Image (cartoon, rainbow, N blue to C red; front, top):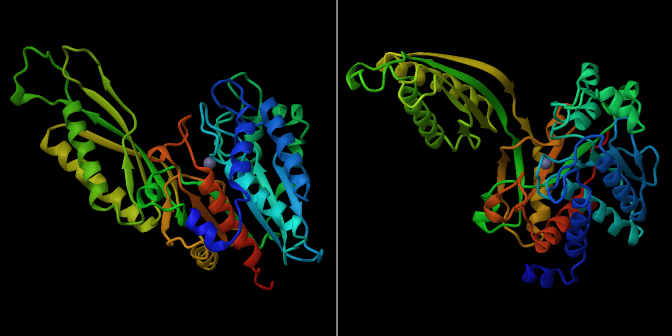
Length: 423
Ligand SMILES: [Zn+2]
């Protein structure tokens, strides 16, 4: 990294300050020493106050919208200029790391601060947003902020309750917002582009020694519940040959799912995970009769994901037939991939190359605020290397000040050289 900085002929500008700001935001937590900050909480308000102060100091007009999104505006000289939006989410999972979401907001504010210090305006108004909710921890609805901006807010969400029975409607009011003003947050037809910088939350860039990468698409996902039905029996009296053991059948199925994903991993970064399993009756001396397990299947390539669903269904039925058990698959969730715009990807690629870094394109297996925007406007994401084997949604999530420096330079280069197409 020092080599890059020497070549650029400029000193460290962003990294250490960004690390300090992330540490400060980590203090706004509902269950210290762990980091947890949910939508419309007191800590959401504290984070908003902190971010609004940073935005104001960076030369932006900043405030909170009706649903608790934090919005800073760095206006173009021409009031009729198009609007480009950037940012990420302020909320966290329970016992989170300190960079997921927040880093994308802080890095963008640092870019504006640098532009403002140089008296430089852009050919578009740049809005930096801290979305109130992305993780969905409090009300069980994800991407509330970004979906509202994308015109996909469902007013039925307002009646959803948190663990204490407080509805989203009440929580928005208590926060000082206006639950009925959700249509005002809709930005359809008003954005030229959406750009998000985010920690990778995986080990790909780390393993390849790269500080940043260009996201090609946010993976689509299919989730299934699989039910395997065998026949219970006494663990001591039923001979091995005649058993209809639902758990050994499920085990073979799970390994076959893993093998399929390994063999097809090149197809849009296909991954498959069995994260939940339950066996009944669940006694040490009884052959398992009923097993339920989950499948989470993701790929940046929707056709590859559909092929995988069909292939796995066939595989599981074959195994069930051979083992004389029944299997049923229930697909309960399907979301298509959100593609990133090729022109914006190329712009990021040039900004990365300008830092002397090899350009790596990669899909995002995790969901992000950016996935709400391709329906509205060209969308792009920059990934920043995640340390510690890529661990995230965990207190051991780390990123380095050097990577914060480089990725903010890349983001700034993007903003300074991006020209929205004429409308
Ligand atoms: Zn995130």
